[in-house]
Image 1 (cartoon, rainbow, N blue to C red):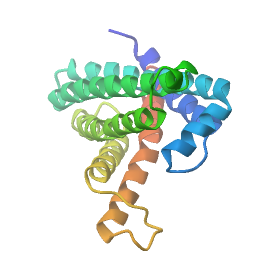
Image 2 (tube, rainbow, N blue to C red; image 1 turned 135 degrees about the vertical axis):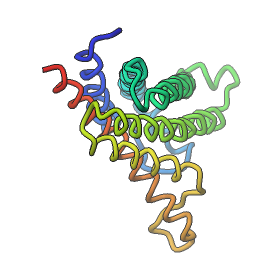
Image 3 (cartoon, rainbow, N blue to C red; image 1 turned 180 degrees about the horizontal axis):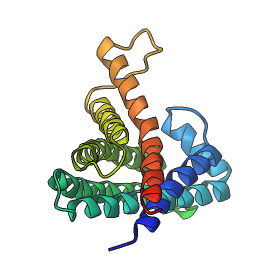
Length: 219
């Protein structure tokens, strides 16, 4: 089994690197796929570097989480089954994210359009797959959070918060989310949008917190 120290560093460095790279990623701050693609194509080198970096960072989070959940599952304590199911869901998220990242990188290739590819359609598919990872990620975060509470192997508050963020991400992904700031958004859509945003922000934060707790448990 991989050491707790390495698992902890994966869960700490993955979110930090991911946030930094997302901030550096070329973006048009638009929901229009064509506009976002053009923003990346205007700075292809930075776009490719950040895309690869984000892929590595988030993959590091998934790998660290898989090993963390498996260590809980092998402990044969209350919540072990939940942790085992959670580790499988993390693997599903990692696979879906890898597919989405591969499509994003393919779009940035100069030969993609000249060979007959449709950048907007490919980008839309990649985004759909990427958004699908949040449904799975919310599920595994909820299960692992409950497992932490039941096993009492880490801070109980961290377990409850992980379960809360997982629930927010799960519900926000299932319901039709809207922008709470728009008058045309329904009440359900506004609530779903807020829950998704809370879960989306909470996912790297609680992952980082769990990583710190894992490192502290090795002292």
